[in-house]
Structure formats: C-alpha cells, structure tokens
Image 1: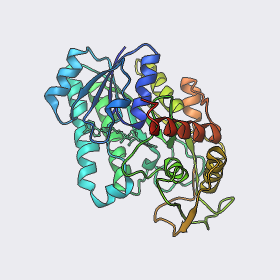
Image 2: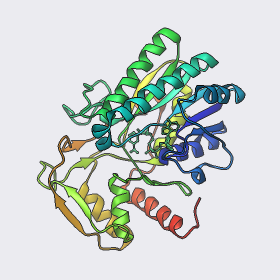
Image 3: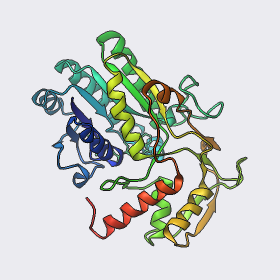
Image 4: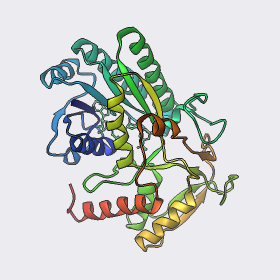
Length: 326
Ligand SMILES: NC(=O)c1ccc[n+]([C@@H]2O[C@H](COP(=O)([O-])OP(=O)(O)OC[C@H]3O[C@@H](n4cnc5c(N)ncnc54)[C@H](O)[C@@H]3O)[C@@H](O)[C@H]2O)c1
C-alpha cells in the first residue's frame, strides 16, 4: 500500500515508519517538525514538511503519492500544557485532525489508523481497562483525542472512512535508530535515563503512598516496536471494518520504583530520587487489557520485559549522544 504517516518524524511515528517500510509499504511522512526530528525519518521514506492545516499541501501529497491509507499520529500530547492552553490542543488535535479527514474525503482516501490514548478513559472504574469501559477524560488532551474518535465514528457512518483507533498506554524503548526525545520530557523512562546520564539531577516520584505493592503508581509500558507493529496489522482490518483497540502489554504493569530499580541495574548508575506530592488526577493503577487486539489481529508483544525496554532506550541514548545513531 501507499501509506501517509502524519507525525512520522516524532518518537513513535519514526518507528512506525520503519515498520511500514519493513512490511513493504511505500511510506510518505507528513510532519511540520514542530516537535519532530528530520534525522529520525528513515531514508527510504519520502518526507514532506507540512502542517495538517495546509489543505492544499495535504491534498497534493495525498494525490501525488496515490495514498491508500493514513496513519495519523500528529498531535500535541502534554497533559499539563493541555490544561493551561486548551485552545492549542483543540486546534491541533481536533481542528487540524478534521482538516486531514476532509482532505482524505476530497481525495477519496478512506482508511485511517489513529493514535489515541489511555487518557480517553480518565479515572478507570476497574483494572485491566477494556475498550468497552466508560470514557471520561480528566484533561483537555484526553478530551481532544476522544472528540476525534467521535468524529471518526460519524465520518465512517456518513462517508465510509474506515478507522482503527489505537488507545496507547505508555510507549517506551527504542529501535536501533529511533528513540524518545520530547521537549519538555514528561515520560518516566527517558527522565530516569537522563538522571543516569547526568543531564538531570533527580527523578521526582509523585506520591509513594498509593495502595500499590510499593506505594508508587503502576503503569503499563509497551515497547515502541510492538506498538508500531500493531499499526501495520491494523491496516489490514481497514478493508473490512472500523475498530478501537487498547495497546498495552497488560500483566501486572510496573511501579515507578520498579522502573527506577531496573534502570539502576541496566545503567549501573546511582539514580537519585525525590519524593514529591501526588499529582491531581493520577490514578494509582493504569493497566490495559489488550485481549481484543490479540484476538482480532493476532497481535503479540515481543518485548514485554521491562529490562529489555529500558536497555533499548539506554543503548539508543548512548548511541545518539556519541553520534553513532540516526
Ligand atoms: N508517547 C506516548 O506514550 C503516547 C501515549 C498515548 C498516545 N500517544 C499519541 O501518539 C502520537 C505520537 O506521540 P509521540 O510521543 O511520538 O509524539 P511526538 O511529539 O514525538 O510526535 C508528534 C509529531 O507530530 C508532529 N505534528 C504535530 N502537530 C502537527 C501538525 N499540525 N502538522 C504536522 N505535523 C504535526 C510533530 O512535529 C511531531 O513530529 C500522538 O498523537 C500522541 O498523542 C503517545
């Protein structure tokens, strides 16, 4: 297929591009580089620097490359920022997303895989979280992702655009060439590794009095390569129907303390910790049931072990800082 990946110069997008290319799809990346990194886009992909709101460029790109399906990953995704600046989030995650859907309609492209999020659930009522559970986001970021899912449902019913919405839990780890760089970085594993490498002083642990096995929050981490492969599998379903899938590894998840301990083992570095107050709206446990995607698409995570995830992130970080990667 000919695939357009919006946000393909970002952390997850750059790995998705590696996997679509590996599966033999001609891949075009469409990214405005507001957060992305041009050097993380695989050489075999065509790169178009453009914004989702630029309808002319978007439609030209869709037509000129005879795009069959879109993987839509471009978005803003900082929870705190979305609370402070909701306009920015509605504009980019909803308005710009609708610009993409309308460009697709105009060009006769009727298949889309969407990067959704566990934040659509808000405070979960039970664990593990299933796709049929209540969605009640607790911040504008989650609201905008859920709003776009609603638009997808309506566009499918009215215009026949088939979609797979993938509700990611915590993406982590790296491929050989692509890894996690966000500015600011808010994700635990890169933060912990920054402390190990001496570019940050200490890890802030938000609350150690949760009703969990060691008092710190439990989260579900999914290796970015496993996540990327789910996108390639999802493309196949779009011939038949639309669907929503959780994407996490499930199991018992890992506590914040467990992540830090594994990072200490992997890096051999002391990683100082500062315990801070709980953050409002942080649930004690967030674990996905990924049963639906396993059963429907036969998806199986290959890199579930936290040690493997952290090692891949650390190795990538070392290679990048010594200029041997990407
Ligand atoms: N990282 C996670 O753990 C996680 C979890 C749940 C959901 N997600 C979702 O996955 C997607 C990718 O996340 P990421 O961590 O790779 O983020 P990222 O910030 O690294 O990548 C996003 C990319 O989109 C591009 N972009 C943003 N707005 C654009 C626009 N208007 N036009 C063109 N390009 C634009 C950015 O330049 C960037 O390259 C996002 O939609 C995010 O909400 C991520």
